[in-house]
Amino acid sequence: MPNLLDETPGLIAFVRTVECGSFSAAAKMMKTSPSAVSKSVGRLERLVSARLFLRSTRALVLTEEGHSLFKKVGPLLRQFDTSEEITHDEAKLSGRLRFSMPSELAQFFMTPIFRDFATSYPAIKLEVGLTDRHVDLIREDYDVVFRIGDVSNGELKVRKLADVKMVIVASPSYVEKYGIPRTADDASKIPFARYTVHGMPIPVSFTDGAHFIPNGRVDCDTGQALRAAALQGLGAALIMRCAVQDEMHRGHLVDISGQLNLPPLPFNVVHAYGQMVPARVRRLSDFVAAQTKAIANL
Image (tube, rainbow, N blue to C red; front, side, top):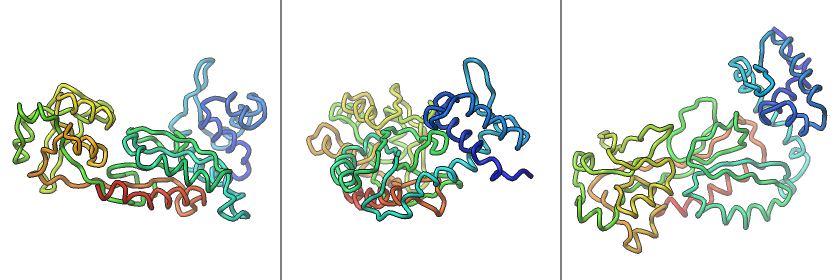
């Protein structure tokens, strides 16, 4: 078996190329030439006896062997970026901190993150992605993500921060037309604005194990779209209670799940650093954890 420590420059060039998407972009980050990056990756490929990229004049595609190697060495090499944290106190933490969270939670977390966390650590560069999509931490080069729902990937470290209450809401005009469901079977017969992942609708589930795939003519991949569809009477929507609290308070949306038992969903922080979590990632995770009462109590 080859000793990969003999080809550390090649490993760095390989990881940077995956992260940046091309030899030229990796070379710019590494302050070298594209040909130097390509040669370093070539030496690494010869060492491991496998093609890591499929190359053409227009595309650079990671092979299965390349993907497997990146999953192993990407998080390890990323830790070298945090080496200066060992010799500095936490008030002087620096470096890039790329994170993702659902867009519907931005109203609760982004202001304190920008106002308090960013002020406390002025040398940390924040890169923020707001999306309901479950991003790939490693391939999309995220340091940490905050997710609603279960995380099944055993390669990731998951820390549960809170349980988030769910609710089925609808507009007053919708309630007049369809009424309020009293059982899971009743709920299965009314139209929904459906939440979809990769084009597939997510089931509506209950604490007793009952579940169904909702019917409806509006499919959405974000909580914001679900809320908008429900406000316009296009369907009922299963959504985080905290995301529609204001609309329910003003009477624009009605909770129609009062007689149904909906399980809460976990709010998790997820990273791929194993037991060696960079201090800046740990501090942001702790900061967000301290803010979770804003959503857990709604």
